[in-house]
Image: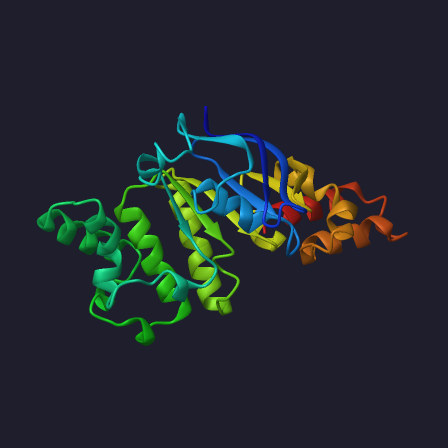
Length: 271
């Protein structure tokens, strides 16, 4: 069942060049979809359209059966949340406690319930000991955890991560990646990760490749990685394991070793 349906979506910032050009897309409930593409391809624009931060010029978006429009926007934002690339841009509270509570307060959740949810989700993301910390006392990865806790506390079914790991150090990136996997596998959230990092994207159930505002191709990771020349043609950096596989396929001594090539391909998809 599609929890997100996009039909004929178009958007332009300047009315001359299409940032999003006739996108049609269905995203199934409970799936992790990675939207990949080079810088300026329209990935982040699509994310902002999905949460109603931008208004489409043409086309329709349905979130869990509700059309995205001014009439339904409040109800839709109870269903879908976004974590942006720069965590500083969305930290709105004076402390971690206030930041996680912000969305709940806007929804007029009773105070005792807010306290309960803030503690519950701060603990879930490993930030319970930081509830009284101010933003400047946190690392980038910790701020991202706070943003995730705030979205989880609002019990949103769909979460979008817009380049949410790109500004983090390797340890922070690993932590957030592992938590995204946990959200999908244990909490059965529908996830959309916007990224140019194919190493990260290959962990998803499904990959959508966008270039110049249009869907270039889509499929499961195996199908997408089999089209590596197309990925390279739009300046996407293919994973090291895929480069290793391709090199083995061309090597005169290795190209006929089917077992080795199968093992490398499996490694490419799983690592």
